[in-house]
Image (cartoon, rainbow, N blue to C red):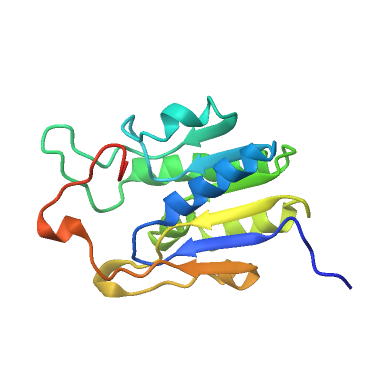
Length: 186
C-alpha cells in the first residue's frame, strides 16, 4: 500500500517560540498553491493579532475563540482558566468540527494542544474530530502541552500524528525584559 500524500496530521508543540508561526507559514504556502485553508484560533481572544489583518485578504478563513488574556490597563498576560475561557474553547471545537467537513484542504487548530492541556477541551473532542476528518484534509495542531510546575501532558492524539515538531526554548528576549512586539510576536 502506497503511503498517503495528503490528509496528514501535523503537530507543532514544545515550550519554544514558533508553533503558530510555522502553521501560518504553511497556510501561506497552501494558499499560494490555491488550496482552501481555515484556521481556528483557540485561547486567543482580542483584536491585537497582526496576522488576522492579512489572512482574509489571502483567502484564509479564520475564527477566533477565547477571552483576551492581555489586560488592557497593565498590558500583562492573565494566567489561569475562567469559565468563560472554557465556554469559548467549546465553541471553538464545535466550529472546528463544522469546518472539518467543509471541503478544506488545510485546517489549522492553533493552540488546541494548550487548550487541551489546560482542561478547556477534552482529548476525546480532538480524537473525535480526527476520526471524522476526511482523508484529504491536512490537519495542523499547535500549542504547548506544559502545564503548572513544568508537568508535560502528552495527549493521546499525538500518537496519530504523521509529523511532530517540538520547538525547544533555549533563549528568549522576553526573559530579558523585552515585551511582545507587534508584527513580530503578535
